Length: 251
Ligand code: 6AU
Image (cartoon, rainbow, N blue to C red; front, side, top):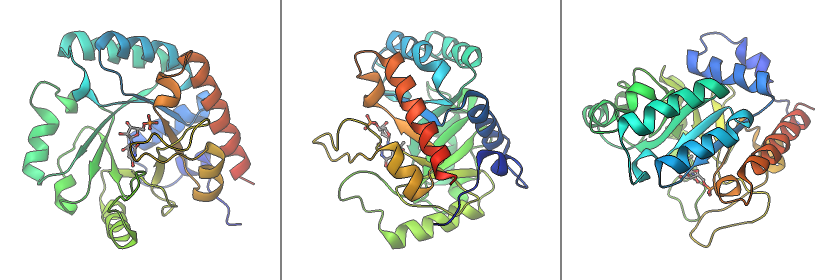
């Protein structure tokens, strides 16, 4: 079996983006490769979840446009404080998918002002290389392959998208269900310890599977944590499962 690079080896590599470095450092410090997906609907639920899972995660992933009572000062400012307190990054899963100029506007304006607070953002690469040029304040995570049944991200698409990711200086990694070139950090959603799917197209794997077979760097867990009876305990379970799987994958 091919050996994977450790987080420390990745930190030591040349030309590492500052957000990638920070993420890897937090991973080593907290012994965690867990990103919790906070797909909740209110500011209170978002803050409560962030407080509970904060000690166990490297990043909190948001879909900020699903927050029904969104208010920049009430939603974002406290969230930034919670992230600082528990030492995790903020990742906005916006999945930008437009021309560069429109993405630039969506990234910085409107009510969410993502560029002010998101350490990491996700973006499709469907708009081509230059569409990614305007995410100045965040590390970009390119959507290369999706976890849902019947996704259009076939091998040809993924290969071309990966070339864009590799050659774009803002891109720190990709969301995918396959192994990536080692200079890209691999973020894998579709992780659940208890179930194989959600009846809506989502397909789940275990941390063990993705670290061993894909050499994943970070797992993304949504409902496995925020829908659990005890999200704090669930985040600890996923943190331990993810870290054990990472260590096992080092061989
Ligand atoms: O664990 P779940 O199924 O409750 O949530 C998975 C989270 C959701 C999705 O929007 C997101 O991960 N996601 C992504 C991301 C992170 O970009 C890509 C993908 O292919 N599949 C996927 O589920 O917030």
